[in-house]
Image (cartoon, rainbow, N blue to C red; front, top):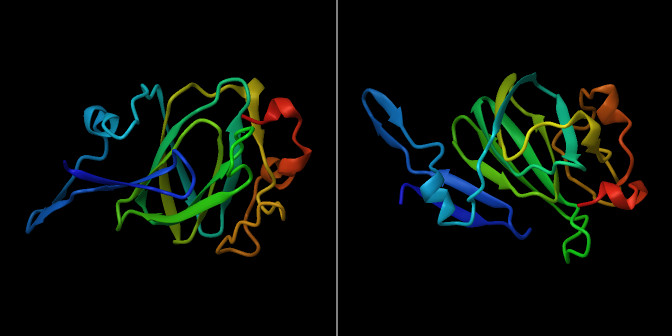
Length: 183
C-alpha cells in the first residue's frame, strides 16, 4: 500500500500519510486513491473540491453543514496549517472533543474528517493553500459553525489573535446550538 492511515482519538477521524517517491528529479506520490482509501473505510464519492489561499494568522472555522453534512479529505499544497476536527455527533462518547494536527506541503499529511464533525484551521506559514475534497455539495441554507474559541471545547490554537471573518467571529458556542445544528 502506498499510504499509511492512522486513527486519531476521535472515531472516524484519520491521518493519512502518502508514500513519497523522491529522486534527483523531484517527488511523486498519490494524494488520492478511492480503492486504497476504501480499504480504510473512506468509500464515499467526493463531489466537490474546494481550494483556499490564506495568509499567516487566518483562522477559518469551525464549520459544518446541517442539511447536507460533508465528509472532508483535507491537505495543504503550500505552507502549513494547524487543522482541527470537533466531534458534534449526538450521543458520541467524544462529543465536544477535538483533535488537531499540523498539515503542510512539506509533510504531505492529510486528514479525513467524516460527517458529524465541525472543521477549522489556522495558517502558520506566510501563506497556505488548503484543499478539501467534499462528499456533498455546499448548501448555503445549511451553513453553520461553532465559535472558534469556545471554552467548553478548549482548542489549543497556536495563534492568539487570529484574522477571522465576521461570520466566524460570531458563531455560537457548541452548547448554544439548537438540536438541529448537531449531527
